[in-house]
Image 1 (cartoon, one colour):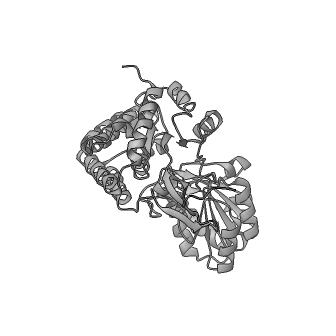
Image 2 (cartoon, one colour):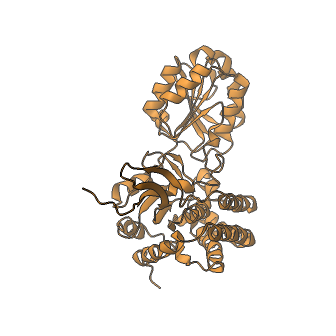
Image 3 (cartoon, helix red, strand yellow):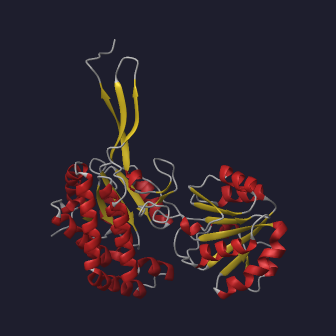
Amino acid sequence: MIFSMTHLAQEAKQAASQIASLSSEHKNKTLLDMSARLRADTKLIINANEKDIEFAERNNLSDAMIDRLMLNKQRIEDIAVAIEQISIQDDPVGKTKHSYQLDNGLEVKKVSIPLGVIAMIYESRPNVTADAAALCFKAGNSVILRGGKEAIYSNIAIGNALHSALKLNGIATAAISIVTDPDRKHMAELLNLNHLVDLIIPRGGESLIRYVSENSRIPVIQHYKGVCHCYIDKDADIDQAMDILVNGKVQRPGVCNALETLLIHKEIVEQFIPRIVETLELHKVKVHACKETLDYFTDAKLATDKDYHAEYLNLEIAVKSVDNLIDAVEHIRHYGSNHTEVIVTQNQQSADFFVQHTDSSVVMVNASSRFSDGGQLGLGAEIGISTSKLHAYGPMGADALTTERFIVVGQGQIRS
């Protein structure tokens, strides 16, 4: 059978009307069944994932890409738990956001409703298949999931598990539509189906985001690269700063909330850098240092302007001494990507200034950048981290996948 993106989108749009009318209880039961089905199909999903890993290794994909691609029993369990967490959240649909009465007696309410049909275009991360499906479903939307060719077997296996749960609950499988042919021509077609699809969310490398943003006739929520900064203030707790730096850079360097640039107040450079040299070497972190800090490291390279713009997604970091807090903020404004910024300080005024003057979607005070994640921030999971302000900013959960409409109730009023 020849794959048709238009036909897939037509079926997704038809399914969207069914999902929008489901009760909270029906949606939540279906989500729990999705979670159970994923656990039951763990072996099948891992077997499919092994095919994708073999493809990745044959094609010399980066270690960071393979890490994002890899599924094991624990990661599948984490996906199942995330869906369970989504199921117990309040239903984001049908909430009255504002309610007031006009002088003419009209009762006005703004009520949340589903967006309709959402298309996810993403690379490498098969967990996005389940996370995006569950979040869109919770918010009453149907979803088209177009993953990359490097994860095609994993995505289909996860999709099959989710479809089993939909069938069990009498819901059209087109509610969660998996694009089984990753040919780029189908993505180009999808981006022009503005009469069928209401929103596009791309998640992946910067080139993918730019391609989608520049070629889509459908509104796009952008998730650009994560150039995340950590600023160590002169009033920082040094032990705390060490822990936050190591966790942010080393725990999982191939993700968008990993640290990429370390900024250090010049007054504590002599105190702090010798503490981190051995630790970074132990973890085999490659360092790009400014001229003021270069000599502290045994094998660092002089940082360039390109390094401060870089999203390394690897065991690699840029290090820079700054004159003061204002200098740190100015550096972030110039080189940042509106993703996540961290300040480590025991000075409340410095923390407040950093929060007020840093425009990124997530700002951390004395906490690791790795908490910039929907699951960690109580959303159950995330469909992405928006770095554009319309209509969502930061980690996006189910609530961000709704919009609002006016409901006006009168007693026969007419306008004069």
